[in-house]
Image 1: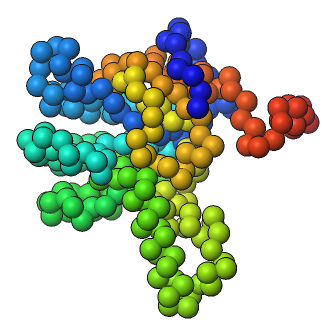
Image 2: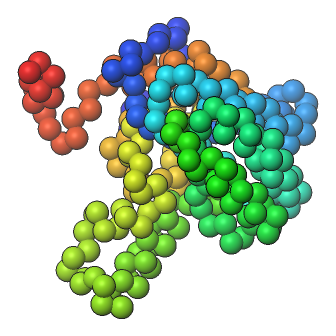
Length: 257
């Protein structure tokens, strides 16, 4: 992983050096509210506004996929009232935002174990996905009741079923066959992972998909993560040499061809 990045003046990255897929852990909502002597829930509401702005920034920059970690499978451990308010906020945000997303050609996809959600939320998710399914612009992925280990386990179970029913030989199991059953199948792997709020860990997010992702950590709390802060992260990404197992000389030679 890279070292923590300092908050330098923003420099807009060129289009050729932009990531195709950005994945973000939106951390710091509760601390943002606490600093302002507000209930934690007010930080989550402020975070929704940042989500709206980030979707707009990514669409403007022609980034293909934006994946946001909204609710992890571990977040059920939080106080019952906070969980209930988070789920209510999720429902209201879906109802409010789906028309806007559709008008802006954004495709919405929710990944995670939906079975634990109230029926009303499951229905809102299905409606929102169906409404935006024919769009061709930015793919907005919301990870809700999601965990990277859960994702790998459910994919492994699907492979086991294929072997048990004779559709697949165990010797045929490889990375591609596993990837086919993961939540983000068919999308480019994340190029840039951003975590706001000062923590430096991936917290069970996209464990398989982040294998070659560039990491960027910032002290900025999520509600304060604006376009300038995003440009700093993009500029950091644009200055890195992505080798994927090759040497730096090999990469430079390919770039100079």
